[in-house]
Image (cartoon, rainbow, N blue to C red; front, side, top):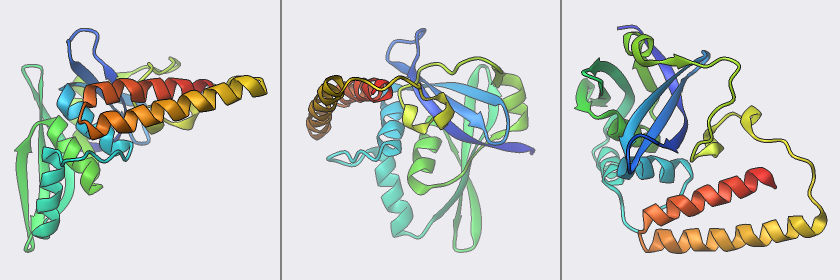
Length: 205
């Protein structure tokens, strides 16, 4: 099976699915992108890890990471290898005691595990050809995790006046405090909204 390596470009809310998110993967060294609609819980699990926010209690994917480490299981890669009836399928490839195993998984779960285990993510060439998109010359859509995007996508703005800059710093500090409080209370929906506010404010500062 021919496959291409991808990385996470970002997460954005899906306008066509309430409570769902679009996970955008981009081809390493290429121009194609693969959008996948995933649930809010899985989106939060991926976003929190990408932004190094530690939840008070472990997510299911954190539990899997603990089991992997405890029993010395190596996660070598995850691959989105099939598209059937508009549904993506994936496999987690792991090694234990010199043997390689492939475990069926939803792409969202596989990727949530991959980001915790620092495993590479691949997409089969067949899936990328069928569902991938190329948008050369177009500006990338605003995503919920701009920290994962290439630096060329960040906005370039003129330097604000000193007083405005001070106000922004104060607002950022207040939002970060609220974000930490929301995470401690395990209100991840509120935390995601605050995180988006912080990122929009940071991009304009």
